[in-house]
Length: 417
Image (cartoon, rainbow, N blue to C red):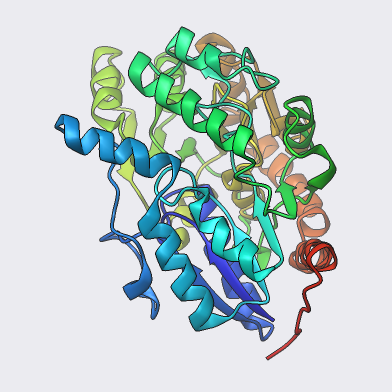
């Protein structure tokens, strides 16, 4: 089967990219021909089709100058260079199926027109809530908000959800235009990694008859489980507001002496978080390790007693939880989004109220000061993940989604090389 994966970035920037790249490797391993389409970026992995990628679009920080901002605003809604590039790569690789991931803004749904014209089966894994919420996250300046559900996107502009009225208004206009024009209609199947996301998308009236729930996988063969109790706390993820790392730093100040906290990852809030740690007087116990290669990250997980995910938004099915379970480590996470589907409270981890450093510190202390219990919980998490997030099961369900898309379009999937 010839598969074209489409995502705006082609490097391990976050969970969406990690999932896509790992999935592509598995599909190649079983004999599929896999290609990628993304935008140009200096961190992209080398790719034989990079000459067809549209130019890099930088949105953080936004471009300076009125003309540049207007041009970028137009591209966000409909990016002509991305459509041209997609046209060319479809002719070059002739995929049996197109598998979309995060295409918003930098690629835009303009890329779907060439796909629809050729009648190629198309599926899209939803890694966030962009098709229901203009600002992706159901957050209004850091607080949970569902005012835009269903299709009341004007509220994003009225509330200035992401802190900028202009940017929020543009996001509202973008999603309104795409919804009214049916820009995502060429997508045959929308994959929701969590049941929570599927329910939210149905509430938001996002193609409810095309939604399916397929949990992510955990490649346990590539993650060695811990064999002994660990020490300390590990966070791994993007350092941005929705991840709640500020709450973790505040909680670190409440932990007993001798419990180290490691923060692995990078992002726009790294400087602010370092300053917060200094102000809280915990810079001696909080270590910023930066973005780590997968092997080193998994080693850090095994060395820790517990992995923490203090997010303040509706996480979908974060890969860090599955990786922690692969490393046989329990997870302390907030009681939001898809976390309760992954973590059995008191068995494979602990669930706490979001934005509550006291509750977070209490849970982390409970496990970090009892590493033997934490290790037992991690072992239980690992046992459960072996079957629940098995690779073969994931690939089978994904193939079913591809087949459903092919049935809808009349396409033919060629299995094997």
